[in-house]
Length: 331
Image (cartoon, rainbow, N blue to C red):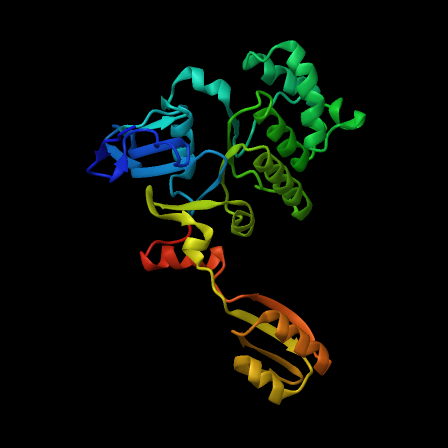
């Protein structure tokens, strides 16, 4: 199938040809502005020429400082708010198409549920709104409660007013999946969670990825994004300033930064560049074979304390991108 190219964006205006990745979501120069002030004479541009492409089966991370427009973009993609410029396609239909909503799951940053409902009743209610047949609900609700770790009788039959923050986040994840969606939008799913809660949500996302779901993931927790996402886009002041696979953005460094304790300094100098010592501890850059180096440490009786790829973390890359453009990390 031939495809015309939008000369303003350089992006194809149709779905990919055979052999190319299946595009789930695509936007062209998406814009959103609001009028504020007593006389509605002040214009705020929340999105500016935002262009994205998301492929089937990938986990896509949206990053950005506070006020960057991340939630506005997400709500625009879902059809909750209408763009003031540009256009987009989700699952082959224009943004905001009603029939698409039954194929999409959404977990907002601060989900609101009727506090008198139990976990089971919340999923029944969500299933009814999405017109999920009752017989399918009876099958899926126990599966989802088990997936999010709320299958115990004490949790599934407890009113939400008695749920912890982590439990509310997990039941929110379950309601986003009640219709077995093709695409799942997660807005700050780790927000306010302790390390255990973050781990649980991360494991749920990994399980969705194994099922072939496409996941749109908006988060401030960059360490989690680096572990979970295939590709990311950084949004700042409504603009997508860079986008790509994690390895494309951070690099695939062959060098390793290592630190350890003990051993023969003369032998260590043969293996490590920029070798520094602090007492009996040392650190440096390894560019030789890592397995041979580890064997050498064993023979010397040295102890390895840390070994990591000598490339920036996603957090370091993110901060550098924002600073290069002179934009504050909070607004």
